[in-house]
Amino acid sequence: MILSRRALLGGAASAGVLASLAGVVRAQPAAIRLGTLNPLTGSGGSYGPSMRKAMEWVAQEVNAAGGVNGRQVQLFSEDDQTNPEAAVRAARKLIDIDKVAAVMGTWASAVTTAVAPLCWESKTFLTTVSGSDTITQLPHNGYLIRTQPNTHLQIGKLGEFLLSLRVKRVFTLAAQTPFAVPSQKRLQEILPRGGAETVGSVIYDKDKTTFRSEVDQALRAKPDMIYLNGYTPDCTILMKELFKAGYTGAKVAQGYAVNTKLLGQLPAEVTDGTYTATPSPAVESAGYRRLAKVLGTDDLDPYSCQCHDHISLVLLAVAHAKGEASGTAIRDHVRKISQGNGVKVDSAVEGLKLLAQGKDVNYEGASGSCDFTELGDILDCKIRFDQAQGGKFKFVKLI
Image (tube, rainbow, N blue to C red; front, side, top):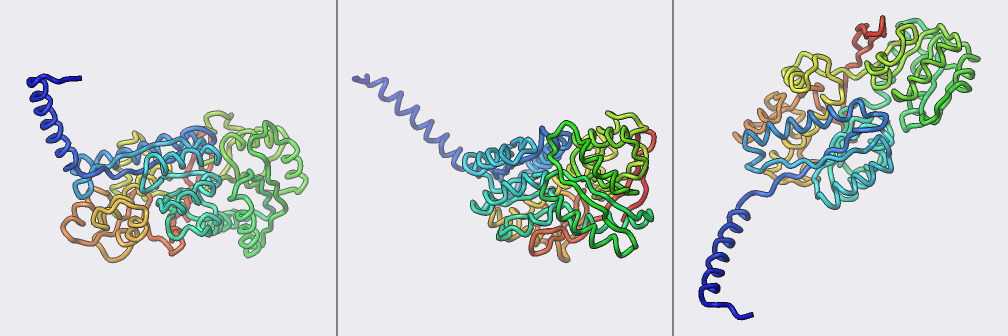
């Protein structure tokens, strides 16, 4: 094709404009790319949306304040479906296609166990609210932290609580998860110290539609306390079948399993008296109050609080690394902004301002202090115990 002189000159002018615009685009700092991997559906579906919203809000606040070292934050969100296979596919997309520096907010221990190798092999940082002891024992090379207390800490305090109730015979009904066996072993360590004992356990497939045989096995052991160590769908069935079987002893469960949603689905006579154990957020902190306002509730779940802190920790670590947004930089700097003698801050925006002034910070967020062991475990966490009464939860104690 032959171009006229006018077309040629016009094309040259257009090319000059495009080149100029390209220069402007190149001058813009690249966004900090982070991934969220939450249970938007499946057994954890009642928690995932608020977990994601908490992280989105922090990103919006940071971007509105100018970003991190002048760089905006870009989130890529995926649903892990509370399913390890689906989680692996989603994590692979976040890592290989979206090129994120961190994957944040995995919930189920089975999901975290499945995606963790993808993260450490690609040097992508992983933050999780999963509690199984085995997670931080994986060879993650420092590319993992969790804000959820591990099994040793959680079940240790649960055992202490059960002894305070003067129970003597505890039976466990547990879903098949990485949390099941370590929980039972920890109870076997704790209960004899107060004159109690474990009288048996059953690990079941959480996708079953009836658990009558498991319930019968539990009742044959004549327990005065049954620990329901599962998720909301299976615990809903177990609660109904225990009631129908005439069990009148005490029950205890994790707060993520026997929750407000479950109480709304079952008659109060089925759930009354059931105790729950939940990691307690820092309910008196300014960070908690701000997040509660954003999510529109005065009673935040611990996982939304922890996810609020996940993205805050990651962004502060990037800032401390002079803006280097890589999994390795986050790994190497996250403890430098969350533990030590720096100025205590409870928001990413506040911490970023201080870091820009050359000051050290010590982040303590909506979930509480964020001090981690070398393996990535949170050092301490309060556990809140409640009891179902009349279709609602009543606070019992904090340990």
